[in-house]
Length: 82
Image (cartoon, rainbow, N blue to C red; front, side):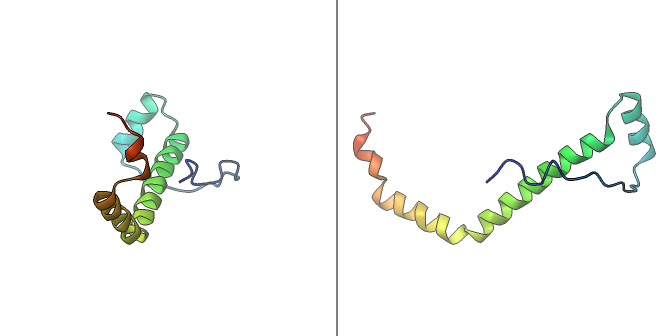
């Protein structure tokens, strides 16, 4: 799965958010860039959700593969000497 789940070159879009006032105050005190932080966290969440969805959609094939490896091993098993 690609590490970039969105187009980082896409134009920025202004939006309004409601944020806990104490969180906002502390973030500003620490000079945390809210836009950059939100983008990074949203990208993480997208990556996690797309991975979860892919695993769910491919669960049957993954289970079949794991059962086959459990029963028959892999082609490289004969090459291992440890």
